[in-house]
Amino acid sequence: MTKDMAEPGSFSTKDYHDPPPAPLIDAVELTKWSFYRAVIAEFIATLLFLYITVLTVIGYKSETADPKADPCGGVGILGIAWAFGGMIFILVYCTAGISGGHINPAVTFGLFLARKVSLIRAVMYMVAQCLGAICGVGLVKAFQKAYYTRYGGGANQLAVGYSKGVGLSAEIIGTFVLVYTVFSATDPKRSARDSHVPVLAPLPIGFAVFMVHLATIPITGTGINPARSLGAAVIYNKDEAWRNHWIFWVGPFIGAAIAAFYHQFILRAGAAKALGSFRSGSQV
Image 1: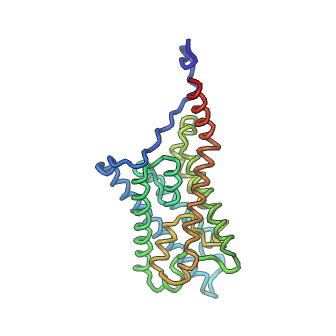
Image 2: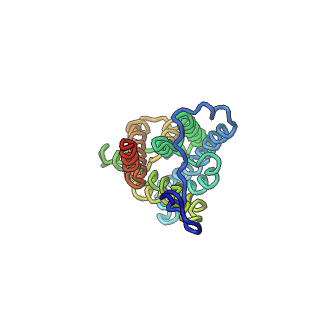
Image 3: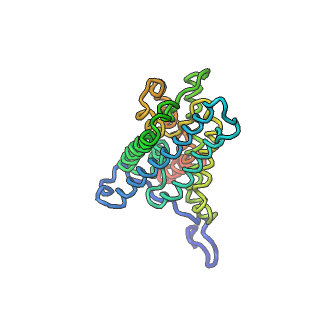
């Protein structure tokens, strides 16, 4: 009996199957309705995400701006963090089976680097996410124009007293936490071992967003999502929204790249497997 054949009644040492790497360019996707349905799902999900969360931010600022307001009567930073994390939980749950529930160019970028999505799908997702974010914030401004303009439009800004390096580091680490959680929650090895994980996958992702917001709202207002930052900056369109806007693209993309490398090549030992395959091939 060879090593690859299991005895009757025994279990295979590997009870899961990694999906094959996505092709770099898959033109066939452009001929499938499922592809466009996924792009639309990303657009709508990001629109809803920005609409609810930016409304929450503006509501919080309007409450705290009133000197007579009860300091404990509003949602507070905790409520803002819950709004972002809760919406991600809801929207990932709703769209995971259609588009994968990325709702974030940084997440899409990390999955692209890990060969989970093709270049065409990654680019189209990012475009849809950015357009959805702009439209979502646009709806907020259309419904509450006076409050929107008065209270900063929900735009990400580097807080006074923090350097650009601190802001960039906060975005890198925060996005690493998020994208690392995405990889871990959707890992096929974990899914095979724990059958309940696919159902609960949106929960740790939402909690990751919640926790990162608690930590970084005082520093950058928490970006960790370039589409979120871009949508608010485009609609608000004032100097303070654009002054350090690059931080909210460079930071998340670096954090996503580090998370993808860590999960694929350290935790899943992709580098060791590749080296082992090379050595075994050279001995034939």
